[in-house]
Length: 188
Image (tube, rainbow, N blue to C red; front, side, top):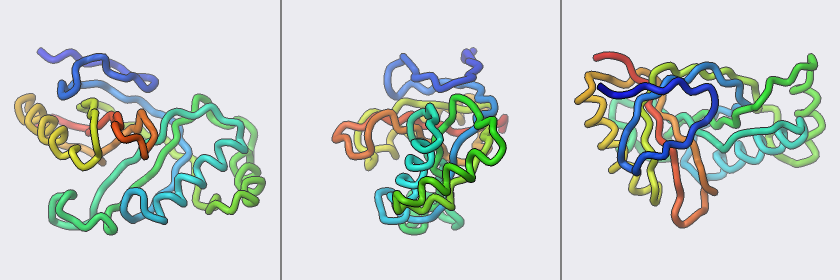
């Protein structure tokens, strides 16, 4: 029987890489920007700048950068040209801004950064039961980890039930990145 962990904050698995786990993720409030385009492209980079500009102005304690990814195409995601990939970029907040209008004021004060701060929104993400796997290595090799996750899900009688989610535990330009891969699931 697979152990299930209840997660109320980001946990970095201590298991060996390539060992999927099942966890439960409750509601998390995040700063969020939605967009489309390849990872590292101008749209993606602009969204990251906007998220951090607003978070800095809010004085918010944030978690690592996260991304939820999907395609609007019948083909599997990795077969779709990267410029057609869609995403929500997220920065989880340790606490929700309590003052009414705090986000609006932070966006207004962040305009001097030149970032597209009007795109930053508050979002609550509740994924429930998820399969997670720590991927260590280049993003170009994530397909190998995703295959391990798919096999684990099939063996566990689970299917995808939400957007593919990535938590970037190292800088995006790190030559040996660490990425926590997450897939919300439900019984098949």
